[in-house]
Image (tube, rainbow, N blue to C red; front, side, top):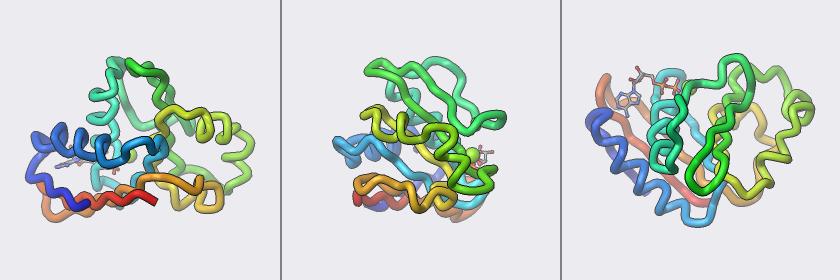
Length: 138
Ligand SMILES: Nc1ncnc2c1ncn2[C@@H]1O[C@H](COP(=O)(O)OP(=O)(O)O)[C@@H](O)[C@H]1O
Ligand SMILES: [Mg+2]
């Protein structure tokens, strides 16, 4: 599925399309350069899942946990991960195989640990305000 957003105002509609398209997939991987809009899209998805706490990049930890209406939502940012062993050490499996939503920034860093089924989302900057968002179910 290909989505196009002309501004941040288009994100709520894009987020609901993504959740619907993902279906029963709970692992969502977010690919895109720094500043592409991964965290911003995750914030919008979280809001639609009923998260009311502040969603920010997990700067001081690898994972943030938020309370959604239908259960916890896990938000990972693997940007600062040095190696996959660090993901094993933080117990990534407990999260990935919990059945709860896992929103993952920089999945490239844990390529060997990605579950068989997931929804991949690639965000490409078109210009300052607009983005191309490509979504596929694997
Ligand atoms: N869909 C979008 N359309 C326009 N601007 C966006 C969009 N998503 C994010 N931005 C802007 O881009 C900047 C970086 O977004 P961020 O979500 O932090 O990127 P990332 O997590 O990919 O590094 C923010 O200033 C944000 O306002
Ligand atoms: Mg980010």
